[in-house]
Length: 110
Image (cartoon, rainbow, N blue to C red; front, side, top):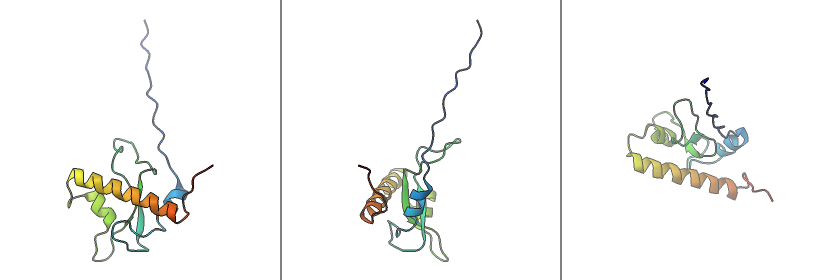
């Protein structure tokens, strides 16, 4: 009997440059500052070679001189516990999608 290696297919992570570009046009969903927004990926379902999906993305501001950005607050998370950080992340993702739809930057297909 010959041993067969069974491969486990790698999951394809959703990527959309158009979505990321639309997200950075929004103000920060946490503090409201404009022109400093980054596309912040959710911190779940990544690690060990897995990339975070663009489907779980939030409009959060970056660090600037003298100010810690909301994106860093999410990623480094020192100010929040694990459950609080997860709730914050989900809220920011939801607010981002609402803002994209309300501004006509994300549309459904018929």
